[in-house]
Length: 407
Picture 1 (cartoon, rainbow, N blue to C red):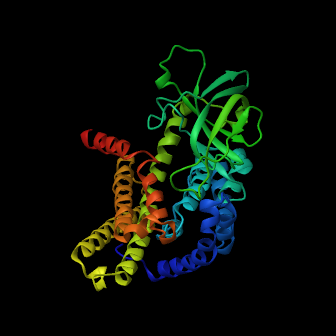
Picture 2: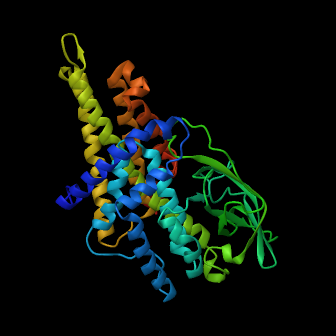
Picture 3: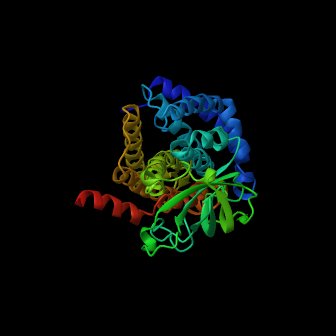
């Protein structure tokens, strides 16, 4: 695949029109006035029938789960499924990457984790509402003292108490945390053994808003991605039954379920950042070209100056490279293949760095205007920086790539 098909372009144009009419007019409200983005996301789901597609996909997944087959999403012919997932991401990131983050965490991480690892009862209880965006989900693994060492440094604990567990600890930088209805929470098993705390079993639980001992913080104030609410979760003797343990009662075959679930989601997150980066790069390039043609200095448009042309040329190189990574991901998905953790890390590392560099160059090209919110590259530059931090920092991506090369 080296370019979008006519069908892809038709999908793109329809979503682009929706974004321009339904998202752009509300950017100031969700970026600067604290208005949550969820109603906009739900409207997009209904407009394009994404909620109905999610219901149909859910029914098939539930049937496979009940018959003993994998709970993973089905593999279907062609690349429309992957493209239909990525094209909205790209188009939304032209204007509002935070919406993509909130949507992706709710459906892809929280909902996806339950759909992959949950029991049929858990799918029915929590999965469908998350996949249709009827409810908001959060995926909670990061902690104040662990950060990039998410699994080894985890301090949130789950202590067995009869047929239940008691959770204590906290999570931070949790997307949708302040408003989440359903939270997928990772915790270390505290069974009183002498096992190395870093190597203890990681369990995954499903929590609901309002549970006794669970506190969801107010939204954090952030540098960028303001349209995606981020918060903290606190657990003080939160009592959960086995029905909330992902996959149900654990046995010997599930001892690494929590760790494997987290690693699979790292792959999903990191591959998605490439599509987010592509949308942001495309918009920065478009805005920069338009501005370079219209801004006049020394009697001619700045587009005629070679230093400006160099900036634009480098932006285009970045756009082509990131687009090729996205197209490769679509082809792999259509062939039923999933990137390795190292491959996903490579995609994420390059794309995130490219997006941040392009956005900052756009600000520089705009000069003083680039530092003013009215010209929009200011927002995109702030948003782009987090691509190098969340879903694993640049440094963590390098580690994962190098480990794979040195095996």
